Amino acid sequence: MRDYLFKLLLIGDSGVGKSCLLLRFAKIRTVEQDGKTIKLQIIVYDVTDQESFNNVKQWLNEIDRYASDNVNKLLVGNKCDLTANKVVSYEAGKALADEMGIPFMETSAKNATNVEQAFMAMAASIKTRMASQPAAANARPPTVQIRGQPVNQKTSCCSS
Image (cartoon, rainbow, N blue to C red; front, side):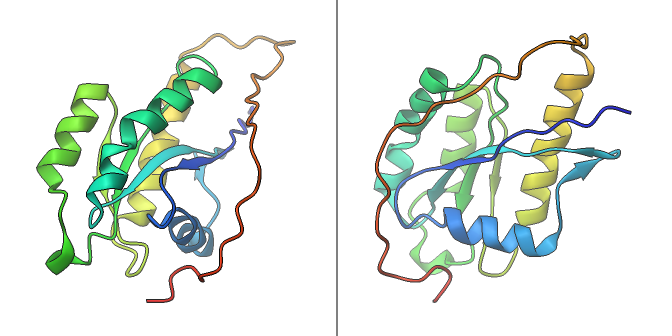
């Protein structure tokens, strides 16, 4: 049995909950589908922040620009537990995902709503795609180069 190893890319505006989602999921368990280890790529926006949603297409363009071809993507609207502050509807997120041809899910890293489901759905999608491709014995895995400088974050994740 051959294992697949993929790298995780969580991308989105500052403060949308990328780190919280990752920390929440990391506490659950490693992503494994039928004995194959899989890592994921996910675009995240904050359902209480219209600007973060407006920037999703920019983040998708960055993935298309720097990632390998046919990369699996998942759009996640995080912080769905903050219903009183919600400004981006589920329907708007779903419509954008449909327009881009990618799956969509709303999550809450704070209370774990759909966190495991988001990661597992993405893992299943990647595993299905990989299983349908012929195995290349000496194929070199694709790489992604990301340029930039680290940003110092002064607030703690998941503190509210």
